[in-house]
Length: 390
Image (cartoon, rainbow, N blue to C red):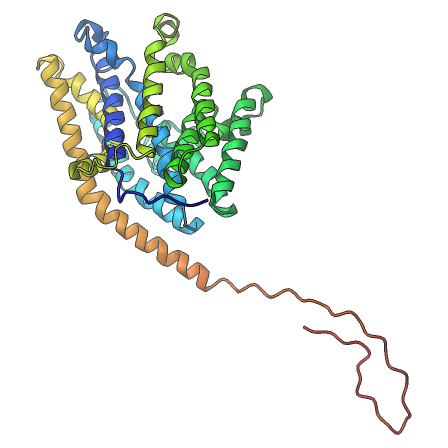
């Protein structure tokens, strides 16, 4: 399978990540009653209708993640993949967790800290696995991402090839489709049927990007698009409540999901290769810290000042503050800390490889030759009873 010549950087993908992050931000600030103390539809009657569907930014994140992670594992060892993910995820996260905890502890208006033990465990990013409360509710998506990384690590161990990724997509699709009916918690936890279609479609889109499109890859994408429709009611209910899920129209959700697939597909096919605006790279870089800090910190600020500033001014000001803070975290924490973590982990992995005994070559025994006939006593024999090679 021949590879295509690829553009140096997909700036449009950075722009899409920023759009997805802002969708989630607007959902939390304009669609939920928690920061305002009452239904924000009375404050933003028009914007509220659009913001109600902003939670779909998470689905777009997962779609982009499938694309990006598939791109990042190509040609890398498991150690390289681990280093890249750890150095990318943890620096901003280790700032966001204590910062959010301090704000919520100081002004427990929209949330509260149960105990500092929870905050410490949150620093591991695996708190959802041992039923520890998230310091910020948006962290649930990080555990979903981590499980996706574990699945991709298996592919890396088997070898990242076009064929192996197609097999992986097929096996994961079957597991996700059957998990709800099999009643196996472990399978359901890692198959993630609600979110698997977005990750798998992202992988297929990257294979299109790298090798060109064909009917098989488009079939995978279409199949995932159809499977993603199964959990629309569930996702609306989990974000807006069961009553809203029963009364809200579902066509906007289907349209946004379709638009996400179409945009990532267009990026995969090179439709946006000419878009190389430098500011998009910065926008993509601040997306992750913005996502980490915006929810409880921003909601607390809105709740605290909701009676002192006009609502539109307050929302715009909080969004601007969150984006500025995200840039500061990226510039003065992520960039230097990521490099330090990456270099330190690479040295550690090099030490492991250096101190790991080399495999001994397998011993191949040669068939035993029949012993020669006995010789005369005066002629000593130097022939062994059997011949072999070590």
